[in-house]
Figure 1 (cartoon, rainbow, N blue to C red):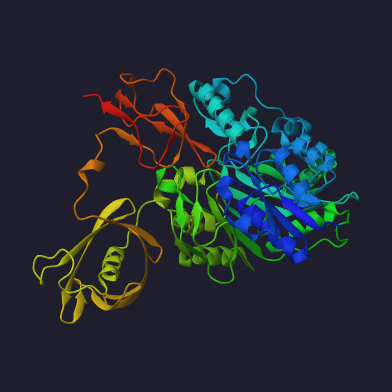
Figure 2 (cartoon, rainbow, N blue to C red):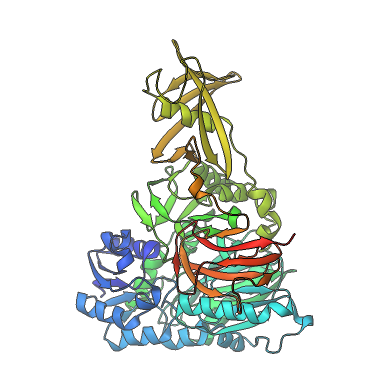
Length: 614
């Protein structure tokens, strides 16, 4: 019987596993890097062990340190979570060799399937070797991981070598293994997967399908169960192929077999020998706790003789600290508040007041809704996200709401090219003109009628804000009757609530302020000074760091004075386990190169200057 579990992971998945362990009466052990010393997963565990350092290669990818931590803490079992070492056969063997229980599949099964090249050969497929123009487009893919890291679509043969190099570097950083391979890229298919459970007594049980077609950078954003619109024959084929893959490697535990569905045909992608990020939608539909099932299987118990029955529909959205309108750039900073309406499942590794750093994945939470029908579940999730309180860095919340309400998604006609087609429309700013006014009125609450910057008492007050990347101005006046604004009746104004009457309609605006950062309902603004600081101005053609990160590479031969073409890659930043390409904004000359490989930069740091050709 398992009495104590160490989770060899961090953040949301560690908190998720700990929750089930507490319900089962199992003691919990966390491991944490120095950057995660005060992280939620380190705080909620019964005990914790420090992994010195911050980079994954020094901490969460150090299987030797994690095994030592498990032994030292008295844990008798290790759960790998997902990502990091979760599909590392060597780590699984080290856990077993230390006399601990491994809550996962046998190392041989991991070895057979964790390398996607070996998995494809096992299923009678093989990757491309000598790529030609006729093979394009192709997908470069990490052999030892997932989550979109180490993946690149190549449409031009001249780009292949550079994308291979970038994918290898990203895969090595995320998984400790830089092996990549190339396969044909099937465009506009649906990403469909099958959840399986297998016990040590020979039972392999498929638990329905999931659709994970809405993806950015090959990483899933919205998932649902069951996958809508599949014929009964195709569902049976997918389940049979998933069972075949699991039986081929004598699989045990929870796993997922992934497919690309195009033209009514299923194309095998890979088998993930671990729990998936999107497992909550399957749990909701089948009424299961998949982590509890993993633990019971690891203890040697057989699966229930009666398969669980599916009920209703579930949809999950991944809430990221990122800006979709700026090439999905990750965001950092203090998460002041995160709260969802009742009736919604929230799996997160953060709580109010936590800091979002640069070292790890930018996912803040998984938000899950379950209802009797797909239409009800989608509507419920979109509404919950729209009403959620999220105060802190920029997130993809608005994108998620718009995606869930997009006609292609509501009609279940989505595919993996959804964001390639619709991202500009989905990220088009739609600012509410009354939000800056509400922010200004809340800020004015309690001020003297002679306060502010006015030269005469009757002059309008003016405040400037940055909202949705654009500058907005709000004007109001102090009168004997209180605050007034042109064309709008101010019914109430204090530091936290403003009520306006606009065209006869009463509207409420809840306001929270954290320094210069202001949140009005679901919109974030930044208060601007009356007079801009001239020292913050940059020369035309300046390239500023869009996020905090590390300069991992500079284009070969690039120095000051080098001619460059518009769109040409100049350097690469690594942040939150992903590499981000910085390109030339115009054709001209690189007049300044301000960074070197290995240098850490903060948001807004000057990276380079390109002087445009006349």
